[in-house]
Amino acid sequence: MVRNPLTDDERHRGLVLGRLLQEARGPRSAAAVALEAGISLDTLRKIERGAIVTPAFFTVAALARVLDLDLSRLAEATAENRAESAGRKQTASRVA
Image 1 (tube, rainbow, N blue to C red):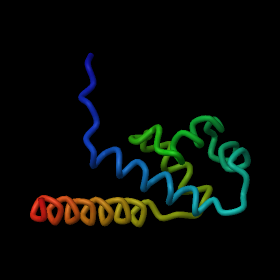
Image 2: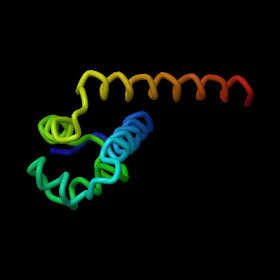
Image 3: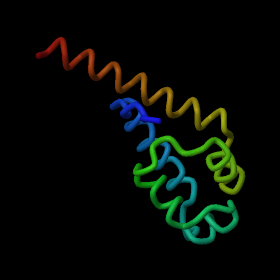
């Protein structure tokens, strides 16, 4: 099965998610958060830096639980950022 290439919006949304999770982690070590969430440290690091832009739902849910984040708010934050990104693209195309 061939996977469709990721769009710019999907890559951007993954970066936003990673930043949100990293900010929520605060001073806690990535290793401690990964252990508590039941994921590998490598996976958490890849999500935080945007290398895994579409992590599995249950991975995000486990991280949200450990970091005391509301999944709805995470979804809203990534959607808001996508809307802002679309607005910038429209503005840029008008300027060009």
